Image 1 (cartoon, one colour):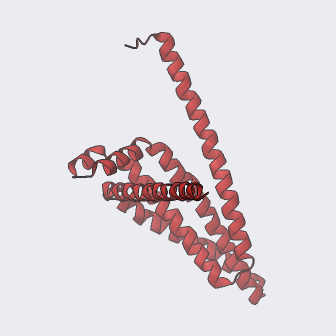
Image 2 (spheres, rainbow, N blue to C red; image 1 turned 120 degrees about the vertical axis):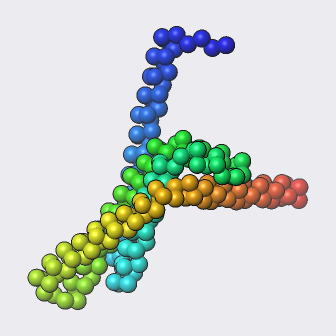
Image 3 (tube, rainbow, N blue to C red; image 1 turned 90 degrees about the horizontal axis):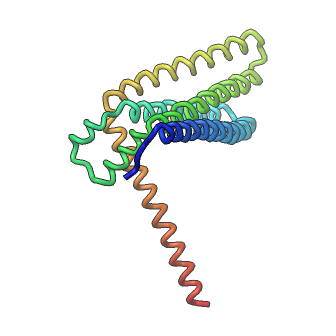
Amino acid sequence: MIIYNKNNKVEISKIRERKKYIWFIKISILALCLSLLLTLFSEIILHKSNVIVAVILLVVFMFLNVFSDMIGLAITSCQIEELKKQNLDKKIFEKCLRLIKSSDKVSSILCDVVGDICGILCGVSGTMIAYIISNCIPIETFNLLLGAFISALIAGLTVLFKAISKNYAVNHASEIVKKTAKILLLLKFQKKDKNHKSRLNREDYRQDL
């Protein structure tokens, strides 16, 4: 039996604080790396593209922004009692519980990291669209108005879609969390299956030798 005294409580609180600082450092590094990779990717493609490709990238980044924000909010607002009422598979229920218990970290990754980075990239795509069009129509006043209009349009659409997705996330939180858990389990199963096949291939190769 473990006896907790004041020293143990202080030590546990220090460990928890240390873990929080480590998590802050990890999430900052993750945000930096993802931002750098996605920005480089978008810059390389956009500088060699036309308006159609830029619009496609804008739609993709906006979708990722809204979708990640919706999932993060759903996981944060989902109630465990609602999941208990449903007849869920044991593995799916356990995965849902892990997501809910780690909702602060999951929402930080989805809403803050992925969502904010995609929001910035939406702005980059919009700027590139205005730049490509301005090269075809060299009128300074028109280009200024075009840039302002595209920025306002992107902001307005993002706010609109986020408002709709947030309302849906709150009202269908358990369904979203359940589907997310199923997808994660499926990806995990496929990864295990690939590792198993690669291990069998290595064993067959050794036997042939």
